[in-house]
Each structure stands twice: as structure tokens, then as C-alpha cells.
Length: 108
Image: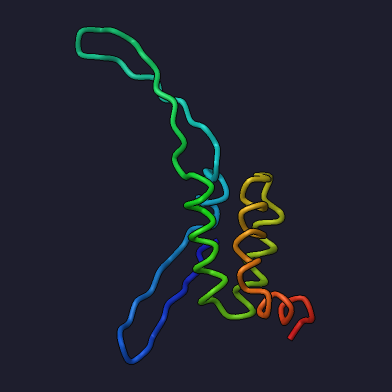
């Protein structure tokens, strides 16, 4: 699911497309890559492609700039995803927007 957000004001225009499938799949998960040197030596590297704090910043931008329908679809998508780290970061990002969460919970 792609989320389109933006801030179109008098001071500037910007837009952002966030791929929730990629964010949820890589949030806080460690990936391992096998590499081969030119001389034939094999080694592996382990890394986290998207740290949890980075995912929380993306989710915070969604909470800040998305409309109600987009928030509804994004929350449903994130809660259906199997990555618990993504769900935890979504809830943490939404805590900064308590007023918006109350409106969201009441269905307005």
C-alpha cells in the first residue's frame, strides 16, 4: 500500500510517497547478506535496513499530514501485517497526536 502525503502551503510544496509494505517488512528486522571477495573469500554481513526510530518518523509524518481515510487504511494495513515492531512504532508515533487519535477513534 502506497500512502501519499504532502503539505501544500504558501511557504512551500512537498509530497511524499511511503510504501507501507516495505516499511512494515523491514522495520527492525535484521538481514544477512553473503558476499564473496575478488580473491574468493566468503563472508557475511548482517544489518538492519530500516531502524525502528526511522520507521516511527515515517509513521509520524503520516499521522501529521494524512487525512482520515488514509489513516484508517494505513492502520488496518499495519495491524494486519505480521511485524510486531511496525505495530509498536505506529502506536508510538500516534501518541503525539492525541487529539487526532480521539477523533479517529470516535469515527469522525
